[in-house]
Image 1 (cartoon, protein in one colour):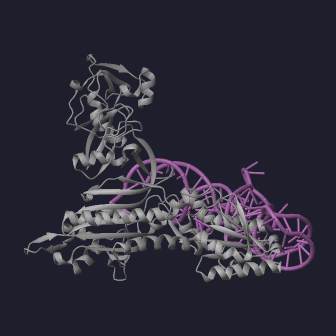
Image 2: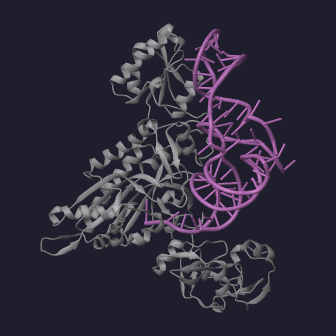
Image 3: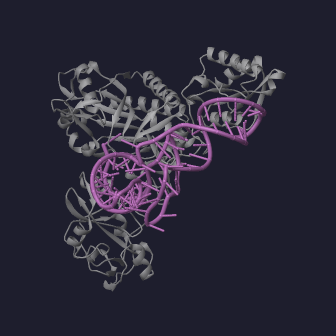
Length: 563
RNA sequence: CGAGGUGUAGCGCAGCUGGCUAGCGCGCCUGCUUUGGGAGCAGGAUGCCGCGGGUUCAAAUCCUGUCACCUCGACCA
């Protein structure tokens, strides 16, 4: 790449539009450009880095015998109507009509078509196992695109699917894919953890997520590192913090709490810690109001509630409904005398003489005990807190945030049944094909790598995915000796297939150095005044020291460095 | 979808309560000087002031509609 003849630009200042370090740096480096909300152009230099990630993934997929194919993005809506997912995706699906007014959608994910493709080749147990994958653009109308390439509306996903005849086969396929994912993310230089995750409404058997550790991660990872425990907050179970309270139960009484609605306000008013309170939250679950009880300092885990009740939709009640079911404005709900199902968190069942809302404006009850109201279910429905005991009992958990760069999923047979994907066994009996699905977002990986490898002003690409391996910078392009040496090194390194950039622009050295650092060239050869001594300078960007090399040895030294 | 904000040159922005030929910095072009960490001097180009309608003698500025983008929230395989 000869810069004077290339599409290349950088921005000198931080961009206003980007809310993440990676988004800012990638835009400033001229690698990506926002086209519309959540949709990006991938410019030449960005594409080079992206391709390297794609290549890593493709190599690892091919190595485990998964076969690549490509599915369409434009799909008749009917395909998703039949599987029941047209409804479940709802507004997050882009939909359009053709000239005959037939409804189409832009595919948000491709299980349906993969099942169809699998069905063509799979009839007998002799046809299994099989594994397929693709890199395909997905379209999801996200309500709020964010963080540069991390949450977007149009993105390429590498999605893979395994097809096996039984659970044992699935375990084997899953393990192969899982190991391949480890190798791929390791090669990208990502710091990540694998967490157990929610299997969602699909009813799958196991879901694990590869989470790149990052402060801007949208997922909360619950970890106990010494014992290897790692779970997404959504599925991290809580264990009881102790035995039921042995405190003597007092009769409850009503207490005025003027203008105190939130737990903090009431706690401050009564001068008691939040742990002495029970929060009563009104939720609408599959259309029905429910009262959920958690300790004052705890939060509801909505995913746990759905799983517990085997429901699919949960939403906090609005102010009108709260008033309807509690007879009071928001802030004074309590379990005593309420006429809807009451679900109590396990931790509440250990408490005694606690405080709840009185279902009346500016009133709370104190010294409430379990016998003072009815509850329909007692279960773990809260979010675990940092410092709580890990469910394996090994110690207190800590939190980190993660960017979900990959997901592996044991789907089981449920999905194949829905898709009508069956095979015949040796005894001529039909069985559903056992599926697994596995996804990686390469561009999200790209962003996660930049999030993890930067110093705020420049991208410090890991060697294997740096779009430019060597930047050759002649300091003064009016100096013929420097130009000649730079040109010679450029030719030598190009000949061995390296990604070389020759900065032959008529710019000052400072501009070139800054640009090469911003885009994250892995190393830089400076061809400057030392050419008169027959030497050039080699610097790995991000490291302090530079070394002086004889011109004749430079190319070979760099090949070693990049090997 | 709810609340708030912003649309003015390639980029970042100023343009006050209604008024002159729409400005500044960076970038860009020309020339000279400079050439190892975002150079200096001189000259120059660039605007459907997001879009539509209205008020007015006069609108970037006021009113209205609309679109786009951003922030917070809701939502999210």
